Image (tube, rainbow, N blue to C red; front, side):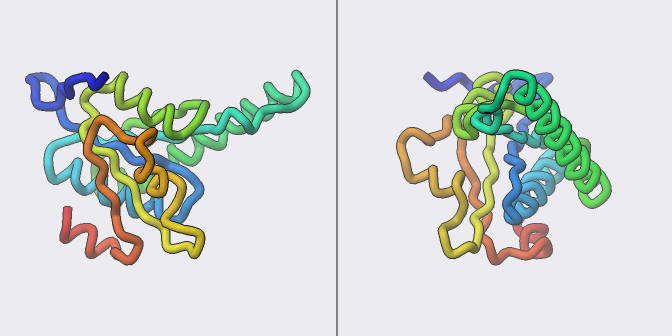
Length: 163
């Protein structure tokens, strides 16, 4: 079931969601989402998903690894949010989730009904455009909001002109 988006109601604003991962293309998705948010009076949400499969260790070690992964996620988000602040001039919301990327993206979209557009960037690697963009072709990944995919060859200047 799809929840109605609230971004057009009084007291709400349209938010653009960018997923942060270790792919080089994620920076282009953030730049486009940030520029669109700024130019439309909207907001930017940065989501970092920690894969829960990373912690299948002994009990004490698992807690340490989870804490280290959380620290790394928060540091990465803080760095990207600082870049957005300096280059685009807006404040970004940051969210850290643990689980599968697709499930956590869906859950966040369901919870924050101001999120109206998911922004992904296609990679240029020989193994395909990236896991999230590749997942768009399957029905299981169908998102309840529009998805904007940024082509891999766009420069920041191209993105600025388009947003």
